[in-house]
Image (cartoon, rainbow, N blue to C red; front, side):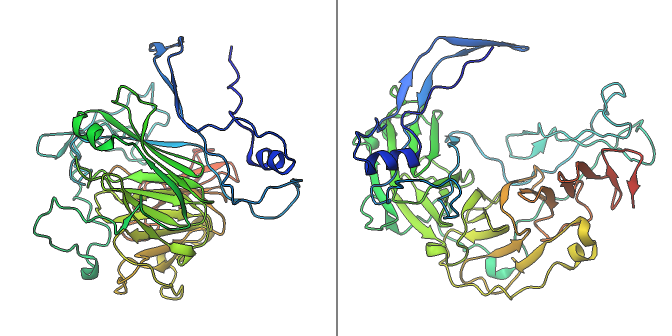
Length: 451
């Protein structure tokens, strides 16, 4: 049994514009969040879940400057602004983040043959625990070999710590500051901005008092909803009341990320990616911001996902919908970029069509690092849907609209031979996984081995 979701509080943008153009009374538009306490529960295998609170985030209407579409044509080829669903990030200031060393490995227990999906399957554990000194313990990998059958014993495997991205390039070495706890903030004041990119900034009148009185073990929430971005305090007695709400003029905020390395009780670094390709670095405590890729000087295509590089204070990665991955430095200025700086990756090219395109347009090892971008990789001619970093801080998983799933050694800027999984091609219905070295096995037919 299921219940259909409630109808939207107001119709789509096209219907809204059509109603305005026809002179009809516009439908109700949400301006405030709504908190309710419905009585609902559902039974799962592990127990009963009870819904305690339901927080409905207000969705902003189209900006008044947008021309109404009187008769929308479903076959029109006119480009429309990219949209995405609501994306939420939760943050606790009292949780200590360990240093970026994620790959200290200890022995593990091998899977029993009854539950192993493949006779030579090993088990990787991401349930690593961190001791008081920040070192990892409990992460493990079994010593499984596809050619020797099920392993009978395990041995300790200790991998060296993953280096920082761009390690070895002296141009990217971080500046030494007298006070390491004093973080650099963006230059521009968000509340006093006269930028046409920002429509309105609504700051809670008692925000200073709320921040001073709240406990650090409470949850902050950050959410992007179409052309709005909200900062909420879920430990407040009034969770529906936002601390800050930013409305952008025409650009839709598609994604965001919070830096867990630089967070403190008086500093939070947030990056946002937009449908115009532009990026905003925002520090909510001081209400200051900086705008990167302004007017699409580096890439004019929308940002589908954005993430801080693990362990980095300044560097973050954005996937653009033209099939490129771009690394930015939040503190660098942008400059017009010449795309003829680097040659394609030799290793990726030597493996032929299996790995398809991986072109290093600009390398992180380039000495030209005075301005953004730090590096650019071209993966496809179609949009990149999502990407994420591996727990050992060495690999990057990327899924694209062309139906491929790539795992990249992003520290070496290559589809390296030590990747445990290099490509899943969903177009042909086949999953390709790495065994040892360059040994590839198709999961559709375990007996079909490609050397």
